[in-house]
Image (tube, rainbow, N blue to C red; front, side, top):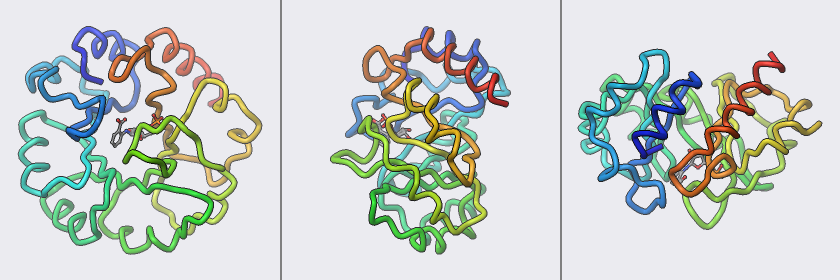
Amino acid sequence: MREPANILQLAALQPDYMGFIFYEGSKRYCEGHIRPEMLAEIPAGIQKVGVFVNESTEVILETVQAYKLDLIQLHGRETPGQCRDLKEAGMTIIKAFSVDDHFAFENTLLYERYCDFFLFDTRGNNYGGNGTAFDWEILKGYLSDVPYFLSGGLSLENLQSKEFEKLRPKPHAIDVNSGFELEPGLKDVEKVKELIKLMKEKN
Ligand SMILES: O=C(O)c1ccccc1N[C@@H]1O[C@H](COP(=O)(O)O)[C@@H](O)[C@H]1O
């Protein structure tokens, strides 16, 4: 999210999390669009997530403080050591992994001690926001008890599929992005409304 009016419209729907991309290489880069004070208008029940890609620990900590972020999503090649440093600095961490048919879930194990959540996104040309789903069957190989976010090309269609119903282990949360946008960085409020209704019906 990065357009103030769109952020407030979305906040009225009370999602559990709202994400802000602090990676200059993204079409959704939020700096220059929102001032840190603007995020203070988001109700406290919505957790503000800062998304970073291969950023230094120092910059991440400064950004978290300036924007009063609740969680960080590390969406690049961050090491277990950097996650340890960030955890020791008091961060709540979502570590993202790019997944394809050959993904080895053993890769997640070294991160378990330092991360609060994992996130599985589809491997693609970009670090994130590729808009394609991976074969969720491979999550059967998930080895960890760390709760995970399902991500990568989620849409109203695939979230209503049999494959989503059958998904085990069940995700802690879903992270929707390009499938619910009018343009990069601008969410389709009506579509998100429909999604929230659908998810409430399932629970
Ligand atoms: O969306 C981006 O531009 C982006 C750039 C760099 C890292 C992460 C990014 N977004 C994350 O990508 C996934 C999947 O998005 P999509 O549904 O496939 O469009 C999601 O976790 C976003 O938070």
